Length: 306
Image (cartoon, rainbow, N blue to C red; front, side):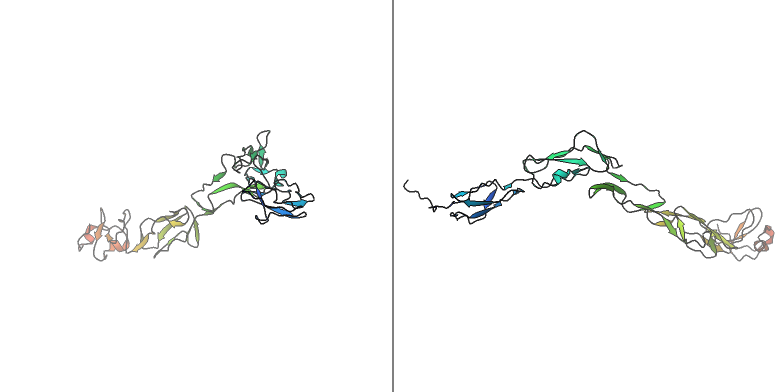
């Protein structure tokens, strides 16, 4: 036919190698002459992989014909999905090419039991994704199918060291709990010392949560404030004392049957029927003797403080 021209292929030449769907000849695409004895290797196009066990080379044989070569490449799903409750069967573990439509099966992992007569399976779909495998393996451990983690709640006396929850997780081909947290007792350091007084925890360096320490004053001194403090915590981590420590004030002499007002720094003159607050120096014998006197024994009283 006029107007058309065809490349001339020498006698005894196989010409261009046969076309493939998922692979291309690695030779120069402009090369059209392949004499008998020539070999051409194919490479996979993007998105495909070489099919294991298949040759990727054709050869120009006597008679100027190419050797038969099945498609060396194809579309394949990636490695099958790794499941928490089941492992890929040993037979499928040896396969590394999964064309569309291929199926793989799983066996329940140690610590899981099969809840049906079937094994979990998965199929390579047309979009090269694996179908979801049915969860047919039930855990024999506490991490059940519907609760795979557990939270820990600790007594107020203890602080949590580590994560507050554990999970049932994969470790190689087995399952195991993640690292357990530990409990550490919340403690307070030694309570403060006070002048002219002491507390009943002397000599102890560490006090457990909820421990109580009581203060007392030396002879001749009065306790001002609450005499007891308690080891507590505001952040569930560090121990602190519940309140400020009391103080011991001197210069007080209390007659029998009387109660000194809190934070008072006045001297009492013991008279009958009730004590009187003395603003001046306490020179009356009843104060010094800590006994009841009579109103007549102190004729020179200063003004009263109320």
